Amino acid sequence: MKSALLIDEDRVMRHSLALWLRQAGWAVLEADEGATGLAIALEQKPSLILCDLQAPRYNGFQLCRFLRTKPEKLPGTRIVLTASGGYGVDRETAFQAGADECIVKPILQSDLLRLLRKIPEAPGETQMAARPAAAGGGEEDFPPLPAGAAPEGQAVVRFWGVRGSIATPGESTLRYGGNTSCVEVRADGQLIILDAGTGIRPLGLSLAREFKGVPLSLTLLITHTHWDHIQGFPFFDAAYNPKNRLRIVGYEGAREGLLGALSSQMESPYFPVGWRQLPSYISLQEMKQPRFQIGPIGVQTMYLNHPGICVGYRLQTSAGAIAYLPDNEPFQRYKYHAEPKARSGGTEILEFARRMDQKLVDFIHEAEVLIIDAQYDLTEYQTRVGWGHGCVDDVVALALNANVKRLYLFHHDPAHEDAKIDAMVAWAREFVAALGDKLPVEAAREGAEVTLKASRAGGS
Image 1 (cartoon, rainbow, N blue to C red):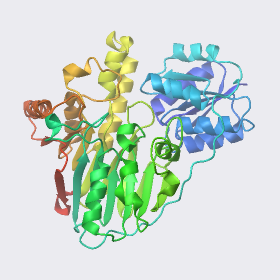
Image 2: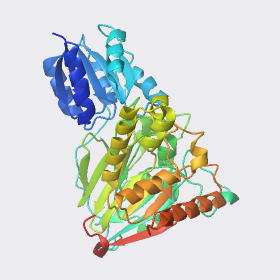
Image 3: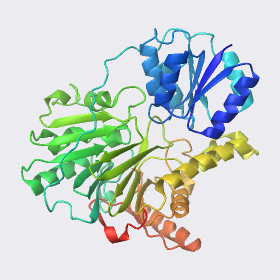
Image 4: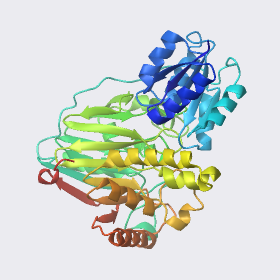
């Protein structure tokens, strides 16, 4: 009997697929995350693997690349990646990673049967050449900041880059700033940097002025490797101080590892200093666990709806939770506009989208600070469906549903001047008031600082 392995944390979707496969005469194996799924695959050698592109602990790209670079492990197994978002780039990179097919969720029974007829009996030549394993490291206990650098019982959030897509310097962006994504968090003796867009350059210069050569231990959390989130790293002053220790954490990208994405932009002829020439001690970790620690700070991750692999972070500090979701397109509005079936009564599609958005609400629930992608207003979004970014109306609704304490609109569109962002903030506040709430809403602004105190942390 042919066997199929389903790797997906969505139990509703997994149950439906298992039922339909058994009705079609398949034996079914199941796993709710990638590491367990890979172990089952290597032991049971199924005929077919259906793996969620965003499976926790070992995502679909990682699993596919591993198996295709070791063809002797499962020589006759077909691999199908399932994508929640349906972005064209996800399908393209799925094939580059070596998948036999890529299908968009939610998967209907007719879709599954058509897929089983379409894919070949055995995979042909793999489309992903073997590459050396990316450098990594285990969990490391980085020492805390020097005394006084992070006030006890407080968490401080500073915005260094708030723009999306591309840096936009100029008179029209002076108030909110033109640098791309970079946020500094100091809490519980730790200094955490969220993303390395062009805003990381002024951050590095500021740290050099503040600490005057004192050795630092820093943690840089990368959400994804699009340029507006990594392009500032070669200009990060702290990476050039041999006394500093820098821990870089992120998820493996769709096409190459985290190390490859960061180091390739520093190759000649793009940059005069190569990755291996950086004098600081750098520990690079490609995460497979959805939870880990940075000193006493607990970190949770969640895949976001954005092309490729992109995650959000939730930092649980002693002064409350800080949620950072810089690139995300809420599922319900996206599916409604992108899927004709959803607009004509496709309840399965809309229910799937609702479940996915609820996961996000649960992830950010009662965060003290929510920093989230609100790149478009509602009118702009109509012509940018599927670009992987949210509109301000949906962001406000998510924040209110999750009972967050403060909302910061982030990832400002490069075409938005200060006056446009002012108007979006005004509308967000009107929307909050119309819904009978008092949620404080601001637009993230370079140089702005937010201080949280432990007395406000409550149960968040």
